[in-house]
Length: 463
Ligand code: NAD
Image (cartoon, rainbow, N blue to C red; front, top):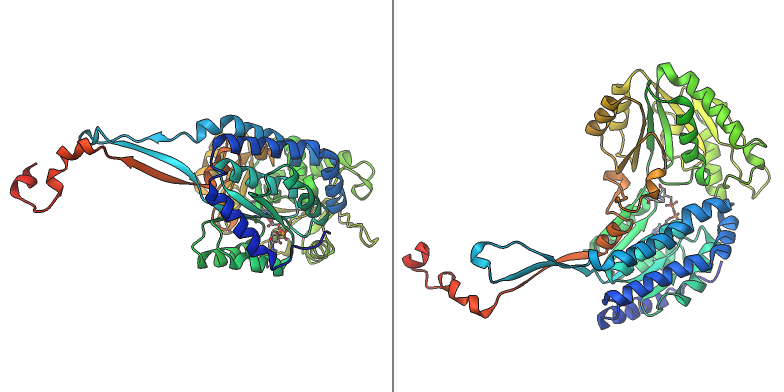
């Protein structure tokens, strides 16, 4: 990895960004649109080096890089640029009759200098998605990329500002000492994507400066499967979400809550599907990522080794040091309190919890933190309505997994332990903006103001 940003440099970076912001350079919509197009160019012109960095960092298959990391950034930057004039338009506010001469409107203004802290699992899209939101809002950005995906981090640090204006956008490289220094400083908005433990550190540091924050966190997203589900398609779609980036994705279906009557056919369908996906075995396949680090690899091995459930598919991993392949692994008879239900798995392990009925599945979900996504597979509209009205989650996805990420015009974010604030296209623009009401009261309106000035008289009260 390239050298970390010297700690003494970090306050200087903030000062330079603040000077740029205060100069007004980032405010004109034309400038923002030009920077958005430049960010799209950065993604489009660097497909090969970015794919290579992600192969080195995560063994990420090229197709997953193209579809999950690069194409959405190119397309969304252009979509935002095309719609920015409309989204940024001041909204004229309705007024009372006696205010008819007033001009009242609500405008969206940039929050200022934003800090974006991104994780290693989707380093490209999870860095650039908040960055395009900040550009659209008219903010300056310091981007702290994850040191864990080190090849990508070095590439971005060396190349991003060849495309974006370096007086308004900077990349900071570093680990915990650097981020600790960063968090002592006063930023105008912090956008953090990562785990809840660090999310709390960020929130506490931001509170000292009353800095508003967005927390894009994770957690255990359940997949309820009821007795009416189409089992073969459900198995395909759940494994799609579980095997994408080897389960290292915030919206991976973490575990299944399956009604008793369908557990057996579901397990059979999952096993068959795994054989189809990885005919040569997952450890030999180039169609599944590797686990990002030795620490995460050891964590997954420990979780699987201590389960009291029964492994019915997979269960093996690479033993050669540094390879870190992990077979998609299905585990049944997993009970509350099991190691596999203790923390977000963030890997290709799929525990199945058997429930007697939908009510028991809903109670299980409600006894835990609100998930980022709630998945439910059902052909019964009443069951879907019941799930929707009796649970809470960042988002809901019926009958598929991960597909919600391909939508440009719905907000993405968590609730409760899975975070707060929203991103994606218009919602990212909104997140980095603040609403600023502006009123302009013409001098001619003074004739209506008599009653509000002292001395207060009975005539004024009658007015
Ligand atoms: P990570 O370890 O890369 O951490 C994310 C960022 O936090 C990095 O930039 C890192 O340098 C910084 N960081 C690490 N330790 C820190 C500390 N002590 N103080 C301050 N900053 C620190 O990534 P991660 O947290 O392992 O990412 C995985 C988690 O992120 C999972 O929980 C996943 O669900 C969640 N996630 C959420 C989303 C979302 O959009 N909601 C997307 C991806 C990942």
